[in-house]
Length: 465
Ligand code: 5AD
Ligand code: SF4
Image (cartoon, rainbow, N blue to C red; front, side):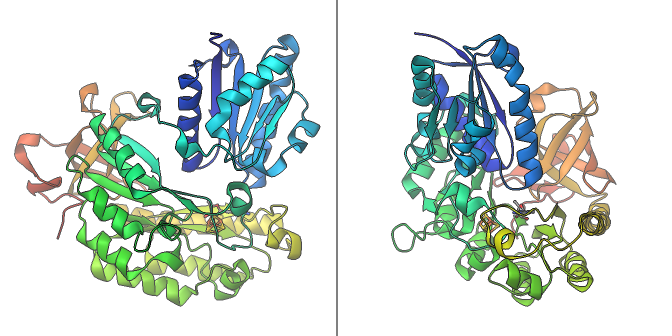
């Protein structure tokens, strides 16, 4: 067989990263071989993102740069996959004719066949229908980047009407995977060393509404919680409208479900939320947070904000700033509004907040969040936390990095690579806005019990009440 090497570049969200694992799985199963060196690959694949214009611009730039390679070596196959493929379809090749394969978000289950077809026919191949769903790909366990952690898709697509968002167009309507298929995949991962899973979906907590009655995220969490070796379960990204009492009760009852909850508000202003068609008010959002904090006092929240949505006034903006303070998010992801062709806000509303105002508001949201994050992180100094060690720090050779059960990044002095993938106690000694510095504790001084609850000196995050 023709063992062609492929190089796969991924842009965008966590869902894209997971899709890339499935794309690589499919290619490897079909006899291709992955390489990290672009220059030695004959198949160049880009898994792309459309969420904001800046994301697309980066991809266009990269595809443009591949033109020289194609000129030198016309046998090279260039494939564009994912959201941009779905959004632009045939027009990708109109703009950049050196692209050979266009593979939409619901076609990558047959990416190998598309690449092969292009090699054999020497023609462009375009697949942007609803064919080979990626979930039918038998996942190659070796394709995941971390041994102890894995992402698992549970629902694809989005049925929500948010006026700014391209996702429903690029990813299509919601389709949930059956509970059995998810459990089977998680069990396979756990047997291969995974102890932390993150369940993924664009509206992850809408899971199950298209399945048998009574199937929802609460049920799935209870099911997965029974797998003994699984120590941490989290899920992203949730929509405030589907944060049901049933889900909250399940989260409270299941101590290994993460105490870090990403619940994007997008804005703190009712006027803007209405124009975005988010389906809740600031007051309802806050009520949900209060309910969950009532059930799980140690719960931490993270948020997404869009700065400069059409019609956003200074007062609206101040409402977003005050939401950060009022909830006390541990983290916020902030984006400048970017009109996406084909969405309601781009087609029917005027992009009337000037670029410099968007940039300033973006900055103010970030600064407010930094202040809040720093104060929250400082409150952790002196505590002992259990972290899952992820690997060497990216910036300092003598440090390793891990994460607490509440998703805080902790750097600590260490040179023992055997700690990667293990849960160890660290004492927090210093706080920054985006991370903590910790000192490894001798494990003999603390006793690890059942669910990763630390007894002895200090109490760990993730401890059940
Ligand atoms: N412009 C700016 N930000 C956007 N997001 C989604 N669509 C847009 C857009 N058109 C942000 C939202 C979402 C995150 C993934 O990206 O905050 O939660
Ligand atoms: Fe986009 Fe809204 Fe769906 Fe999130 S819920 S993916 S913001 S349409």
